[in-house]
Image 1 (cartoon, rainbow, N blue to C red):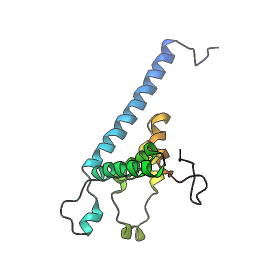
Image 2 (cartoon, helix red, strand yellow):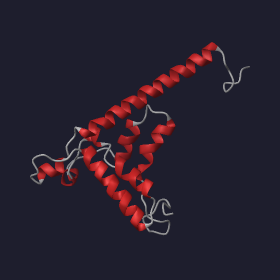
Image 3 (cartoon, one colour):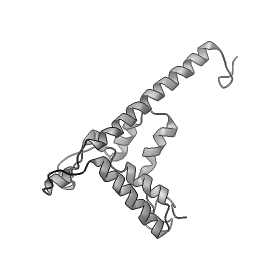
Length: 151
């Protein structure tokens, strides 16, 4: 009986290589999809009459910088703030940038469900990065806190 952790047979090595190939394809697909955010425009600005609105990627970058600076000023975790901001609109590659008022008339998948689908083919370490972005920076004593992110 062979131990799957130490099995060095050609069959086992081929299986592991095949799994890594599948995971690599999943990661490449996810990264390509995230690159599409630079081409998708924020529709709320069109509604407000802005003729050339920023892309979702531009918005997410700026939100990440702002969140980092504000978190540092307030004693929260700047890295966590950056992560929350950079991933907050990644689902829009699949469901678009639905204006707030439009959500009243549509049944849309939750952001968590879309994110889970986006990273389904990725290895667990990669899938945890955007999937874990839905926390927030409030301390453990705050009424809406789900995690303690304060230093």
